[in-house]
Image (cartoon, rainbow, N blue to C red):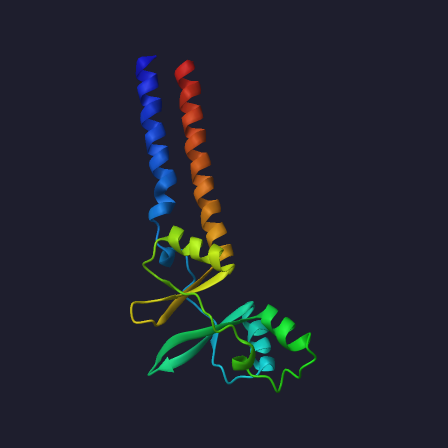
Length: 173
């Protein structure tokens, strides 16, 4: 029994280490590297068509420093509905710069996932563009990306529990 107890205690430590894995995970490992972008002088109609074509709900608004995209804002499908359509404005006459969210929250690709998630929660946002050390856009992470990663992690945790349960049953036989 003592050997079984020690074996179980060792497994519990391994499982605790596995569960803490998310605390040291970097947000760059979770993000999407293909980011749909636009510039501020496009019309609301143009970006609505881009969102439809790309099947996305947001576009990161960028300015170019040479060939490097620097994020300056974000426009979402909700922005188009609330700030253009619901106001009865002609989407062909409204520019992205008129309706985009300029107070952009970004994260560094090497930032710890927990820190970025806390900032998302504190700002009440679902999407965060990722930048490198020079401020160049390198990716975007959404709440959905994080949920998928957590689902994968929980699936792996449940597998650890199943293996542990099987070993316990085999030890009793």
